[in-house]
Image (cartoon, rainbow, N blue to C red; front, side, top):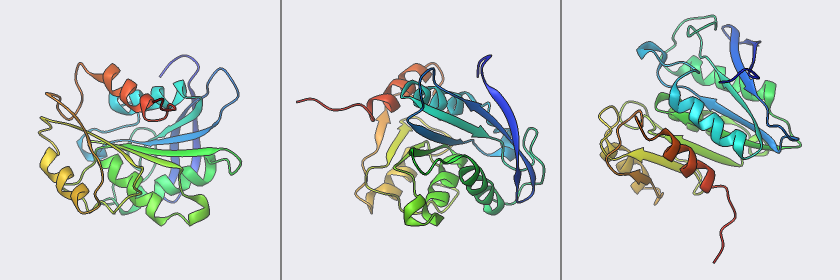
Length: 207
């Protein structure tokens, strides 16, 4: 992400997991783990939306951890149809979460599914304080129900995950969805807007 990004590996269930870690200039308020899009279709931790999410959390004072799922980038192993990828996320969370600090979990596209599934599997004491899902893969994966304060952002003209699929998934949960007009799946030309949207969800509100 920048010259200060630390590249590291950790032991995962299918071998080494490649991570990219960024720290704020001040003492971190917690850690934010970000999951990337579908590795079979070229998704990696260096995806622009994933980096944008990491930058938003960094601005909010979080240490950010991006990582490559098994078989992507420098991570060992092979694609496991979404099952092992959730295990990868849980391994990264276990290695980097600080029980004394805040914990955020986020994901883009397929990574949104992984983030939601990982959060559902974590014990109550270890669950993230907040989930952030951008263009979650609600059309191709069974995304579990999520907490009511989950931030869901979706592009109106998304041609990879139709907006209707995410609205249908959210409807039964009465879960608000932030819709960005005229924007597609990868938020081309609107990454700054996406970052600002995420940051605003965590700022104190004034009346």
